[in-house]
Image 1 (tube, one colour):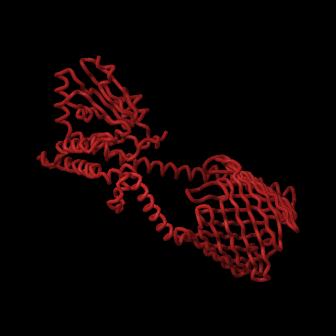
Image 2 (cartoon, one colour):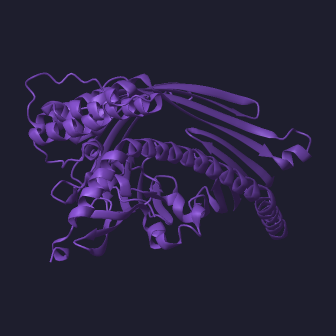
Image 3 (cartoon, one colour):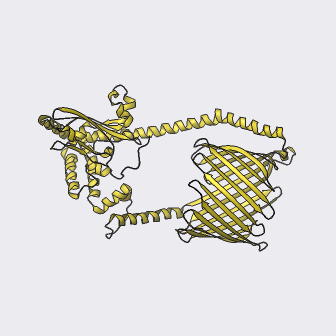
Length: 540
């Protein structure tokens, strides 16, 4: 279970100075003086202790420098150390948190746009048509090839350009085309595109898109062929039907006029779509359904029927890395029996359709489906799956080693910080014992699960103690002269001096055993909850 992210953020410096996020300037100065007195390097003679003090004194000074400056404190409250370290020049006229937030948002957007403008987004695809019957007839296995490539760039906040090209070879014939698309964002709800291409499809066109409402969008396009001067007008209306589904109507008027009605639905586990298209000389209907068995694998079934198509497609795919997916599809139709292999990596695609037979022989079709499918599952079960499981285990082990290393460093730093608190903490504890005041007998900070087994720490050291840190000493140090201990609400306790986070990413609690007025008590609180001891009910 991951730690909730909805809690207050940017509170580490408040924890470091042991003050509330609402602390006044005077409270900040007072806390700084107290901590600076403890950690000032000049107090220590031993080299090791002086080094520890210097490291923690620098942390205290940095926290005070930020929180004592009104502007820096407001920036920190909104954006944390990211905002402080960004080096932004806000000027002297920005005094309100809203003004600072607005200015930071503007500068951040500007920085992001600069990054986007400098970043080109390439995409491309290669399709290689293979024909087994053609190969058996001695004509070579390659039937044809198609290659396409495009580069998109955000040249300014409202303008983008895409340059692309494609080459196609089919038998002894071939050709190519080049295209340019310029897109301008006219407003937050409308945009316009100008396009031009030369080669196989020489044309000029313009297309505009507008969001009519929150759930509706309309697109209108006009294109003219440079070969025969024919004009094509297109209109598309899209409507959001629900959170996971939308429908669209597409109308095209020109040499090949048509109207199409489509529907798409995408959920976490499944997606589906369908379309019916009627044209002046053709008609067609298509549908597909995809089911996600897990975050990495899916199955797919699709069907197409019409005046030029009649086919059924079955298959599936698997995610082999963060950006790569492989798919294997089996198609039976009037054009023959096909196996199709696809590799998708980022914006690149490699598609290899293999024509197995031009004839729809039922026995051959069944064998063409069963034999490769069986081979695929055997390969997946005994080769692919073990390989990726082993790789995932290796990555998990590396991440665990990295986390363990960070926790070991944090524990070492917390232990060093406690060393400098020890003398004062012991004196405070002795004074409280003499007067029957507040004494923290035992305090443990760590994961929920580990604290449930806190009594077994000695027996289950590796599993439990590694997720808990003993913070008895720093809590005794934080007891006030009046015999009270307060940890502020909304501040993660891992940032307190002498504390650390022993289990990153896990929900944490603080368990405290204490004595007051000769009686023993215990209390447990969540990481962001306020702790005030002794509690009112324990004072009587």
